[in-house]
Each structure stands twice: as structure tokens, then as C-alpha cells.
Image 1 (cartoon, rainbow, N blue to C red):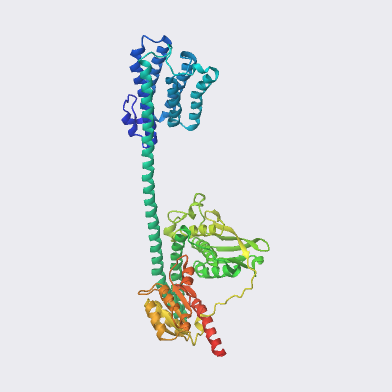
Image 2: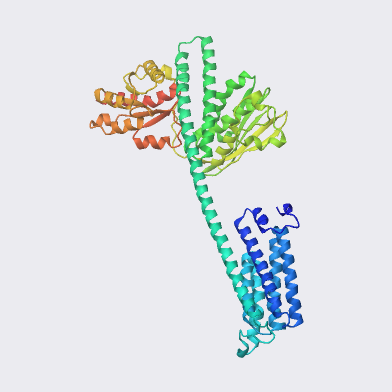
Length: 596
């Protein structure tokens, strides 16, 4: 900064203009004021005492004047060296105290006491506390030594012949007081300005934090709304595709499979974006559900087989024998997401060869098991300087990767953040042109309860005859899909366009369950459920309510439980999943009928 100040600069204003920091400006002002007043003091008293003091006193005064002039010029040329200049000035003050006590006056007078005070507080104002303590001790110690070794009658502040004669002595005392007042005033002003500046910055920071929070909230609302708007039509696409498959020819089935796969790929992309937002805001909470790990891995790999076959690849799954038959407690959704992203990524960047998925038991105790996972491919590989970068969001291995292979660059970033929730981390080994291997370790608790796996029934070949379902759904396509599905299963259904309509139809008729969309006009699903639970008729008030929602809110389960709903199903859903929710109701109704 001071390199722009010319050597012959004599303007303090120019120096201060280049200092952005309030306290640094204050230190320069304080140092400049002390030097200026000290020189002014010498210039005023020198003519008064020129013929009245000893030569050695005169030489000392002239030396100090020249020395202070040099420090002042150096300050205006090199203000960044203020520490050196300050210490040089303070050392002269200490030398003055010692010489007054031991050489010239050989007693303690008012001027000496003033110098002690000035050296002490100026040390703390201008330099760091460590040196300030040392300089303060050096200034005080000769005074304390003198008091310790002399008699009480020598403890005075009077003027003796060796001291400056009047009016020089009085002028020095007065100028010293003026210097102390100005130094304190300048420091107080700097302190006040600094506090005001910090308060202004704090207010600005609070405003920025509030604005950032508002932007984050608006982004979350936007993503939630976008999720709902995208997942709702996807629900119709996937649902209708499954519905039509029942009566489709072989060629049509092949086309429908492609359509379903494309819809599921779009759904995966939407989920990646939304899950990344949730991990970024720490809104993902892991579930603890009994899981058969080999079955889970088999389902994930089977689901990606079609994508691999399109490229002529094999997806090979190797599961350690020690894992088979074992049930672990974990979050199956997040485990699926991690493996799905890694395997899908491997398939995308592999043109020939295979993708290998391996799960190996590393160790087991009575309550826990550690498992090593790896996903390897024979794909394009990753350059050594990009091994860390690919885990950054919206980043891929090279600039042309997106153009050649597509994708958002979010998959690996989500994997890394999800693994962090499991207290694990991803490891990568890769060689360009030969392939890559992603691996991680996880600790799982062993499930010791009795497991009764629920089989996924072939929904289209099953029957819910006898069930009467009230459908509360404002989207006509989705309500049409639900009607067609229920009709396939021989169940009867009635459609309500909104929550209020659903409550009115429930009051007018009799139903076995309600499929309740959450986002509806006039009265949403939460309000409608609250109204149903408050009905006077106890049978209708206890009717099972299953929420249907395209929302991806992190606490959706808590919200529906709080509202009084019995269960929920996320859109888009597979028909088999809806059947699984309704089948127990049909069995309960049949059981009650037989008992009656």
C-alpha cells in the first residue's frame, strides 16, 4: 500500500486515505499527533531555556527534535511500518525517563511521571500487548527503584536547579497534559467509530443472513412445488403404462417397457436434484428398518439390467455367503440410492465389458456387522487430477463428458453426502481407458427380531372385490388412473374433486378407505383428514386414510401422522405398491364379515 506514497510526501491526509481500517487510521493519527506535539513542545521551550540549561541537556533536546522529525517523515512515507516507528518513539521516551532519574535530575519530578504514564498507555495503543508490557515495566522500574533506595524526603515533584527553569518547565508539563488528552480523545474516537462500524456490519450481516435464508426457503418451496408438478404427471405416465401392459401385445409391451424406463429415468433425475437440495440443508433423516441386504442388492441390479443390456453389458453381483440370510437394520431407500447411482454411473461410462457389484462381510460381532461394498467397471476411467473433483456437485470428469454421456453431475455428489450420513466415505481407484472402482465400508446393526417378509403380489392379477374406496384427487388424470386400477381389482370407487367434497361424500355414503391427495383446492388433504377425524359418527371418523402425495418433504411421515392419516404412498407409485396398502383392508373386511 505504501509503495504508492512518494518519498517527499508531507500529507497525513494522503496516508489516511489509503488505510481502510479504522483502528489503523487511529494508530497513525495518535503516533503523528505525539510526534508533532513533541516537536512543537521542543520548538516552544528551546528559546526559553537555551541559555539556562546545561550543554548535555541542550544536546539531548536537539537530538530528540531531529530524531522525531525523522520518525515523522518516515511515518508519512512508510505508514505500514508503524510498529517500528512506534517502538522507536517509545524507546526514546523510556531513555528520557532513565536519564532524568539517574543522570540529570536524579529525582522524581512531574515531567518524569508524565512520561511514565505516556509511555505506558501509548505502548498499549500503538503496539501489541506483549511489547507493551515490556515497555511499561521498563518505564516504571526506574521510578520504583528510585523510591526503594532513597529517603522519603527525596520523594517530591518540586523543581530543582538541574531541572528546566521557568517558564520552560511549566510549558513542558502543560504540553504533556495536552498530548495525553489528545491521544485519549483520538483513541476514544477510533474505538467509537470501530464499534459503530462493527454494529453496521452486524446489521448488514443479519440482513444478508435473513435474505439468504429467505432465498433458501424460497428455493426449497420452489423445488417442492417443482417436485409436485413433475411427479404428478409422471405418476400418470408410469401408472397408465403398467395398466396398459395387461392387454398389450408383445411388441406393444416392448414399447411400453421403453416408455416406463424413460419415465423412471426422468423420475431418478428429479429425485437426484431434490435429494441434493435436502442433503445440502441437512434435511435427510435415516430410517432404521430390517433389510435383507442380498435381496436389496439383487433388486437394484435387476432394475438396471435392462439399461445395461441396451449397451451390451453385464451387471454381475457378488454377495458374500456370510451375508446371506442375515437381516440388518438400515435405511433401504438410501442404500438403494447409493448403489443405484454408482451402478447407473458405471453403466453410463462403460461401452464394453461389464459392471461388477460386490458386497463382502469384513467382520461381525453379536450386534453389528461391517460390510465392504465396491462397484467396478471397465469404462473410460478418470484422469488422476479429476479424482476429487468428480464428487463436487454439477461436476463431471471432463468438459465434454456431459455432451457425450449426459447427466447432471449430481449422482456422485449425492453418494458422497449420503455416505456421510452413514459415517462412511467413498474411495475411488481409476485408470484412464481401463475403468474405475468405487468402494466404501458400512457398519450395520443386526436385526434380532422375527422377520415376516411381505411379498409383492402381482397387482394386476389380484382382486379387492368388496372394497369401496373414496378417491380425493383434484388431478383428473390421476383420479382416472386410480379408478381404472381399482376397477381392475374389482373394487368400487367414488371420486371427490377436493377435500371438502371428500368430507361431504363420506357423510353421504359409506366407504372402506380414503385415498387422500394432500394438495387440493378449497380444502387440502391435511384439513380434510382433520375434519374426518372430528366427525360425530365414530365409524366414519376412524376410516383408514392413505395419503397420496408427490411431495418430497423430509418430514412428510410426521406430518401425515400428526394429521391422523394411517399411511401414505409417494407419487409416482407402482400399482403393486397401492395394492399392498389396500389388501390388508380387504382381508380385515372379509374377516369381519365371516365373524359377523
